[in-house]
Image 1 (cartoon, rainbow, N blue to C red):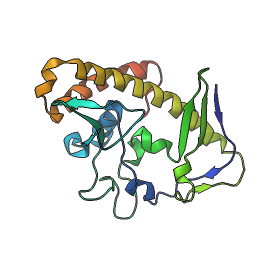
Image 2: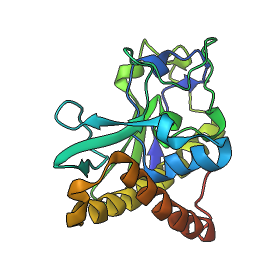
Image 3: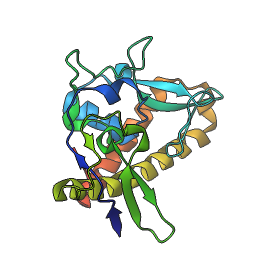
Image 4: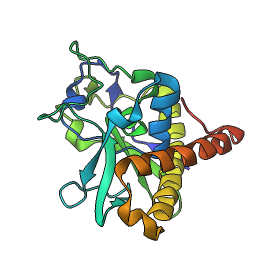
Length: 204
């Protein structure tokens, strides 16, 4: 069961504010979407964030030469701005952007009974121009999209954790480079894409 708090009106203004404030952790499947739908050179599109500095409760850290990192979208050097943010504030990969981006400005919580509640990200209040706290019911189409997205995201993160666990468990990866991990995860992502497609859970 999934519930959504009926407290907001939301319509993305596509002004790019959120694309300059947060680092974006991604999964192997997020990366694959960039490759197959955007024909993007993934080696130039992602980077590794030191797990000693950056924190994530949902994404697993990847082991590269004895250190741990989070895979994320690359940022413009010296800034916290996503490289896919255009000068006019538009997302250059909007149609196939990472699921982390698609969920904003909402967050989900998984409860002990398996139910999922969706609410507004408190950090987005007063920051996201498309978010209006007016007490009105969330548009039905937005609710449906959030419900499906929450299910898909939970599954994709679970699959990514399995990929990272397998990678981190390999002894020879102590000598591996980031590029080696990227190649490995994309190979696994293609397998998982086929599985998700067969279950009707693949999203562009």
